[in-house]
Length: 376
RNA sequence: GGAAGGGUAGCGAAGUGGUCAAACGCGGCAGACUGUAAAUCUGUUCCUUCGGGUUCUAUGGUUCAAAUCCAUAUCCUUCCA
Image (cartoon, rainbow, N blue to C red; front, side, top):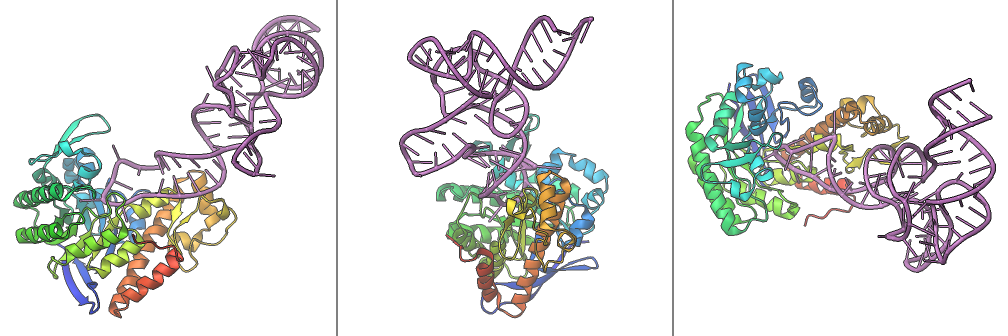
């Protein structure tokens, strides 16, 4: 079964949109946050726990599953859903981000990208065709085009050559895509150059995809101001009836500002990575449970949070688990942080309905940053 | 009773005359983290009014100079009786 997106309501004051994604007999509202499960698992959580937090779509990664256990193993298992026992929609990233995080500029050619396998030194070569073939076999519900994700610091000249290549890669990938149950998304790049974002968006839309992603945002400590503008530079040139997905975005304020600029989907490793590092999101700001001040704090992370961790455990206990390096601590914090982002998205959707999202944003900034917010 | 080895910062452990306020690890205290090479990484960890002050079991000594050499005391470990 293929996902179907329906646009329900548009803000009159900004680009925010309310929509829904239909998946068989299930429906999920957008805008939505999608947790990341790189190795076909959201780290430390069972699929039941992932769903319990309110997750609809979750991610897995082409690059990682290609290396281990190999797409053929997943395919023999009956596809990703069966393999990892997740019956919700799954989006696979193409390996494009690994071009940014693992490859050097000289490893990137027209044909594809050379990687060094950090585990055994093997030289690996990934092409747009290969990425799509792997994703077809993995049988995810949304496949991503294989893109180059250049650093934010790349100059106009490099960025232009890069997006032109990424557009050619998108076309090559689409040409070999043959999984009728799988959506295929194109990816807009272009850094902080509006003309390049426009060009990239228009050319990608010309090829025609089931949805469009905004890539290369918040890459190397880009200012929030730039990130937000990149959202706007991109969505401006994307069709209204298709999903827009800001890749790798997950800082709470970025979600709100992203929605205001017309983004429907977000994913990020933050809630789970921060959790493993002892941090918890709260509506009053991010807290570090490792701090000694929580040693005897016998209150939940957030009084009014409905997650499993907040309903049953105290900060003192979770701090203790984290200090002892117990997985259960990371698990409780992962549950809370993912639930937090889903609650935030629910608030965002409520405020799109009443068209008060900008007021909500201002209120959130006041509460979350307590006057220490710097968007530049 | 005899023989041997040893006591170094919160803990473990390097250092055997000056470059030692003393490597490194752990623990502690903080910080970072945005399509996961990340349960990781970074900083800091004797006191200080940032000039300096006081340290390497204790005391005394040798020396221009001692964690480092000598003497005594004390505690610990192992082996023998």
